[in-house]
Image (tube, rainbow, N blue to C red; front, side):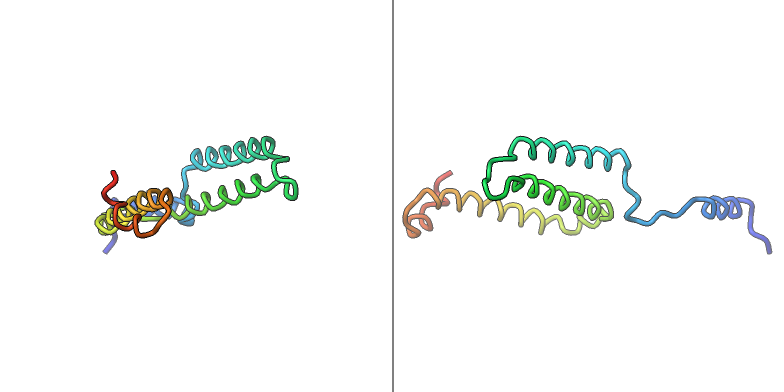
Length: 127
């Protein structure tokens, strides 16, 4: 038995389409914009802060480039992530977000006080 014409056309289209590796399936305009922003930001920070630290004149520039590299790695990771899986984790993500916001508020109010006892008792009452 031979395959129908529709199956033959579908098989031909799949064979003719080049297969890209999953990490190469990025939006090229987004990648160019990201690299441009990292490059321009590094240039500006490098020229503006070249003499701020005496022992290491490129301190802020190296940090900017390192943060840009971390951002690119995270961009590649997020491009491969299946967003439908985040729906399963929504309560955990929401709870972690609330906990981080609470800890930030608590630590900022505690840093203004001198004793840990006053911080632990009244930090949550101040809003």
